[in-house]
Length: 195
Image (cartoon, rainbow, N blue to C red; front, side, top):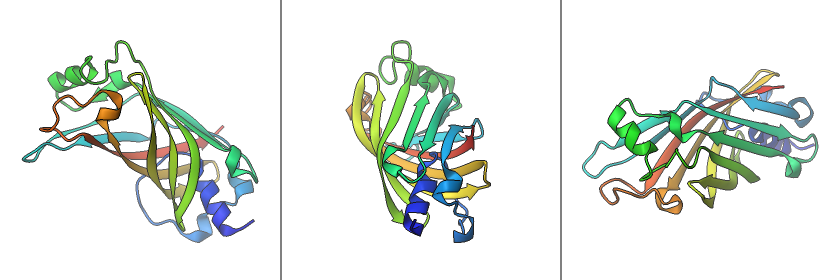
C-alpha cells in the first residue's frame, strides 16, 4: 500500500478540523484507520456570510451528527455522511437567528435537516484532500466540494479541518443579495471517534 493511499484514507475518515501540522510519522495506515467513526460533539461547524461595506453574519450550528466508514484496502467504498439541524443556528443575535430559521432562509419548520453525502475523495497534498459530494438543503441538492486537512490521530480519534464555500442561491436561500454575499464560507473542526 502506498503512502498516498494511506493519507487519502486517513482524511476520508471524518470531516474535521483545526490546523496544527501533522507529521508523516503519525499518519495511520489504511489497516489501522479502517472502521466506522462517529462525529463527536467536540466538533465545531462555523459559517460566515460577508456584507457589502464590511461586517456580515457569522454563526455556528449546535446540533449535528455524522459517520464515516473507511473500508480497509478499498477507498472507493468508503463513505462520509453528515447531517445538521438548521434550527440550531446561532449568531449571538436572537433576531438574526429567527430570520435564518424562517422560510426566507433555512425554513427549518419544514426542512429539519441539511445533509451531505460524499461521492469521491482526491488527494491535494501530503496531509490534505478534497471531498466532493451532494449537499441537500431546503429541498434542493447540489454537488459541493470541501477541502480537508488532517490535524490529529490517536488510534481511536481522528481530527480534520474542513473548509468550503457554498452558493446560497443553489438552495433558494439567497435573500438579501447583493447586500449580503451569495457565498457562505464554512470553517469546520471535525473530530471522529471509532465505534
